[in-house]
Image 1 (tube, helix red, strand yellow):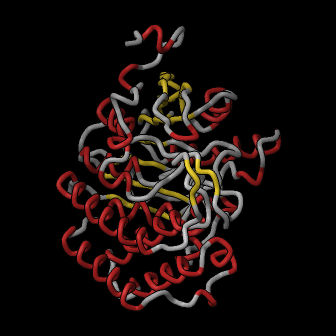
Image 2 (image 1 turned 90 degrees about the vertical axis):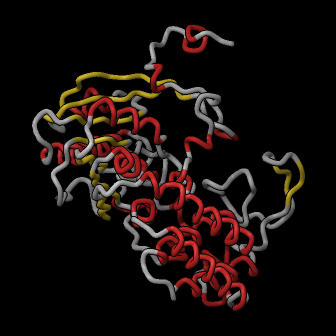
Image 3 (image 1 turned 180 degrees about the vertical axis):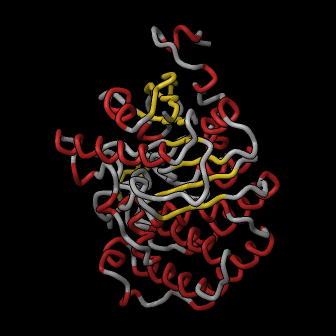
Length: 376
């Protein structure tokens, strides 16, 4: 077994935050509702949990101004704290709300199974009225099955309807005409057999969606059931709003967040299928660090201004001295040198963690900085 010195070399990471794959396998990183839907760019729940215990107490109110898939909100609730989340992506807000809603798991499971059976009995719908994007990315049968399910879930009441929309989105992600190993940002539809790096054999493009709808109906019910006994009665609010200007309806005790990085992930396009199928409101032009802006100097300056506005807006709504935990990959030194001081925050400590758990074609390792700040 490699020693810590051999593993980390001259770096000095926080060992409580630097887990190996064996210590923290993917099943634990995507436990219960954290695995309801794939989401590129989220931080792991164990990281949030550690900082909750270090800097907060049950009964506090934790803010994440870039809520993403809702990791901070879920862990804050299990910890016994209230939470606020804000995100510019309507899909992110939908996913976070589904994770945070207090369900009767048995009722939701029954509703999801009923909708699945209704879609099966109805048979595939005609894809003719679907958008051009959907017809481009799906085989006719797969698209017809997705559309039939979308019609079937319209009969459901909230909150089962929201849960069903996540099932539909997750099935749509898997049923696209793409390779099995490139589900994040496939460049173009694949319509012929191909060599699959994931399965190490020749695979064919997906032509149906029903099997994914069945699989994710069962998985969604199971995940909601697993989280139910961990859920507390603490309040959790998800706001579809702009972090630069939003007024929070509760007074946060502190912040735990992982902000977007400039020019790395398009948070609308990674879930394009959901926006197309669910008719969600689009605010991609308001993303901070949007991929379309590139990574040049002008884009960097715009990113700095926007992050100063977002963190400054959060900071002015915090009590003096409140902890602000910012998980960043700050190779350019934008946060410590330019963003944090201008946002009215003071860096108390910089923590380094070793990230070496990635799997698949994005496997690798790197060091990540976490800025522990205080509102000033």
